[in-house]
Image 1: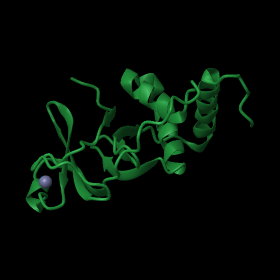
Image 2 (image 1 turned 60 degrees about the vertical axis):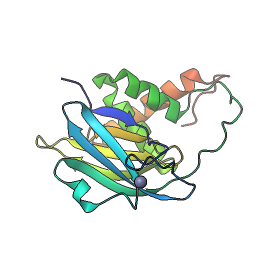
Image 3 (image 1 turned 90 degrees about the horizontal axis):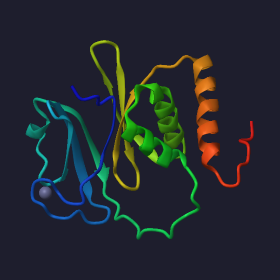
Image 4 (image 1 turned 135 degrees about the vertical axis):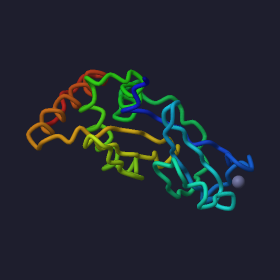
Length: 175
Ligand SMILES: [Zn+2]
């Protein structure tokens, strides 16, 4: 059984049905389904989407606007950012990092890098939040650990330590 409490699903650059590449500012529809292979994402142009595609196993459906990715910027300072740290942790998929992954996702949402597309409530009271990266369209599937306020502060401290550990030169995070 694969652990998909945390996952990243990239947006495709072309419609999954007619295969036409998306144009800048074109509206698209994204669908997440869940099956034996875990989460599967379909992106298609608005013209190809029909409401019949929603049923029966779609877990999340949202509309977005395609933005042509900018040319790759020159290699920035070698420094861990909240986004690169989150991507690295999702790759590891270690439940021990569950709280940290969630706080990083919330930080990126506040900085308007991620937008929340859906919240899924699962049977055992588990909350899964579906975020989409505003620029790249990547979908971040993040289990919400439903932290108490006093826990949040503790995890935030942990996150700042992980971020500053990678920074050059090492400047302590302002508190
Ligand atoms: Zn299409």
